[in-house]
Length: 377
Image (cartoon, rainbow, N blue to C red; front, side):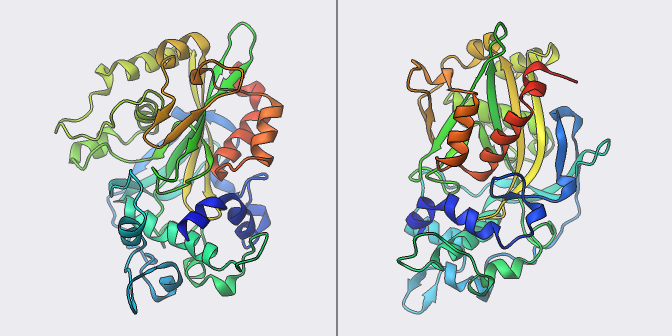
């Protein structure tokens, strides 16, 4: 069933989007958000304040309730797995499947002059136990010969148990950060972007579809107490993902027992220097929920001048731990990316299997292309 799920994630997301109020949908992508979660225009990433909460918020819906039975496979006659992550581990484990500490999203308010997010701690498997279970539930509800998926609340008891998808205290919501990376040619103003194919054999979520790169969970680099604070920064998390996904470097997981020294890390230091001179600029569009899994993603774009990009990422890997980078047929290197043109954007949004967060970012980036490519204020 997971193979069937991964083969039709986009279609399932479109089908289940009809169950949520139309005004919550962000553009054409199967992504939903509260009004105060999305910005009317992109703002610089550094303008968003992260607030820490030590208050433990109990998780009401965990994915272990009786309503989850349709999504939990049998592990023995008459006995089901108690958690969806246990089923994945024993029946269909991807190469990357670790339970890591994650930042838990507790509140979002991106209204002008009050842009902030409040977060605490939970674990990655807390997220998967519910998000992948409701996706599985929807896939399992489809008739064998049905050409197009459909969604009906009567067939989705676990999803129904969640209730309001924007109630961040009722269920575990651990956000990912997905980034459109634009390589801007200073002399022409034209741009290309990085595209990623997520290999179902390697990843547990958003498998078998295209996504933007880098993309990753917003997590501390280790379980050490100091990393909880040291890594509590959207940009730092994004730079770690650039290192791992674009350059193919080992994951900085804190295994050395010392906090990551960002200021003395050459990649981070060089990107920071370029940000200070506007040769690299990071923007945020807001936070959205994928309709299929109800997982949250911080929607971002990073614009890099071509000379900066080429010096730092000119040796981008073809294949990484989660899939493969995609390039235009006429390009000689994956670092050249895909042309950021109306034709490319429309094709990806309408004809290719693309994850809803990436589709939303790409759509909004094209809409605000003059702003983000020219650094209009």
